[in-house]
Length: 139
Image (cartoon, rainbow, N blue to C red; front, side, top):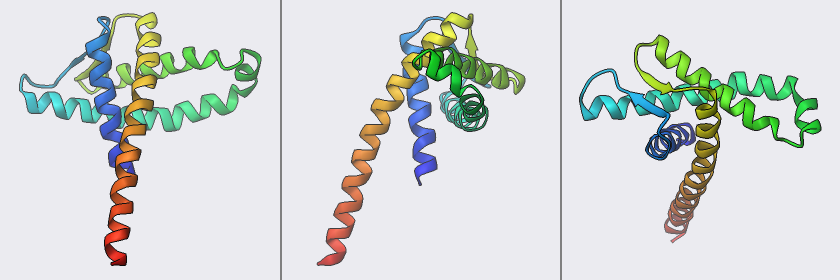
């Protein structure tokens, strides 16, 4: 359940990011609304996998750079990960198009902020639902 919620949060954050920034756009595999939604969901999956695998490896190896730059290197790393997502989706024949690396860094910043906000809202909603379920079972 948590994994699916993470994919939906990533997809919505990516959709909002493409609305905010002009240098980042999504190209669906077909010209229908369903294809656009499926493309956003697939990009959410790709973002989660890239961030969990490559992102974790880069953070582990580059820990010293994070300490030296007081975490500012994270902007560049997240931009690089965003660019990797665009590259992977392009290889699949659909997906994310980023004009240049600066747009990737900007998109990573915006997406991080939106993911944090949407993730907090989703967590609060699921916590309420689970506490309501527990209290109804206790009666």
